[in-house]
Image (cartoon, rainbow, N blue to C red):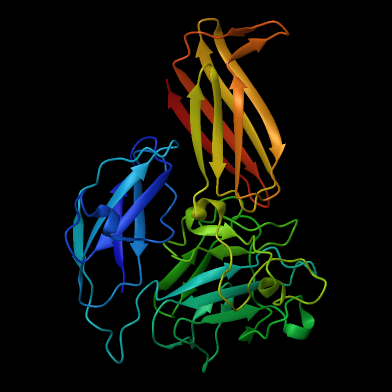
Length: 364
């Protein structure tokens, strides 16, 4: 069972701590409440944010609360506490609801074998098998007799295993499958209504990497597939992932299987900016999947606006710390410090198969 939550994004928010409990939540017991895994990345301050909490028991009343943190990991007070009661156990022959099956992965760019070697993967979010007869997605109509198992996957490809770059037997091979490289939007129909949507049809796809053949994967908590922030680029480099591909190929994807990657935004790459004795520095964490870090510090002083910039090769390290950035200048004999500094702005650009920009603000 699941519950949908909606809230307004606070100012200067870079991370959420979302929790739930069977008892009312307050400041005293918030830390003992159950944390929600993979909370969403905050949107722009003032925007409305939606999130679906899944994996809940049936016919239970749950209480939910959230705290927001800034770039320096200063946490807000407790939000207002809301509650909701989940539905009763699913009946033997339940009605189908939008979101019961989602579009889970798109190899929209094709593979290193050829551009037409595309695939699309569906994921069953329920605890029952669902008949897909007559459903349509990506230009394909699914024939009678096809179904997707409970909590399972259904793989649609343009070519069979022997004629493609993947080392997996598809559930359906159909040369009508067509995934756009630009203005991508894919809708899943059950013959009556739209069950799920992937991407918004505007500009480049929400995720995926064309030059290195990395698929566009749905987050573990699928959210609204129209929104870019529920998609990530496949970054996994495990032996399991490579087993899904023909020997010698470096494509990245998990056709017909569980997604193994989460975007950097999903694991919560964060910055902590600090200042001491006319010097500043920062700590960046959760950097797996990135190769390079570029930074720019901007601050105003009594002598005008100043800037410090640089870049380092981080090679996928989990975290990176830069210290002793002097707010001033030094010669062999002495240092001249910039006075009147009241605020420091930091921008960090993380470079990898996908890029991400982080910002932090420190008031002195």
